[in-house]
Image (cartoon, rainbow, N blue to C red; front, side, top):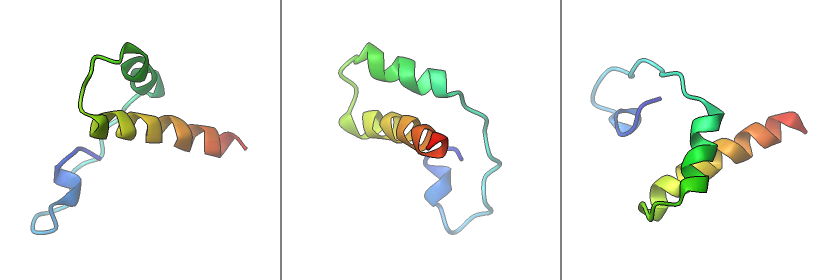
Length: 54
């Protein structure tokens, strides 16, 4: 679900978007000094995928 629309309770739910786990992994490896909050979002994507494998 797209950010920040996912948290807007006053409007209709946004349409889901398709992302790739490889994109999140590449963003983490790049480490461009982005804000830690988005790095946590990307890490959560990777951890969620790992959790589904176990």
